[in-house]
Image (cartoon, rainbow, N blue to C red):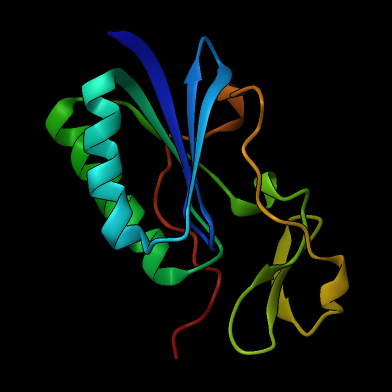
Length: 151
């Protein structure tokens, strides 16, 4: 079995799964299914085909439920299977484009500040998997980053 790193971007539809070997993207999977439905079965399928040696995910901002589900699932796999687990903020995967928040509001990143604003949606960019997994760009602080206050 080949060793791979698995990157998941589950912040919006479609969900993106990247399989990296020697830090190069060798396979990508897109899914319109909900994170709760696809993540466990797809992880099982990938684990039967490859040896998953590390887990990476976009920890927010984005869909709160998807962030929670991915975090809990990956954190559990990390503990149970002793797989290192890492995170990077969502803006890394969409060229710092605004990200859907609530209603007509979007998360916007200006310098190191993230706020919610109404924006011109014609400038939005989709999330994408990087061709190269630059591991030094990821953090071992994997807690979800919701970037929204308590309601």
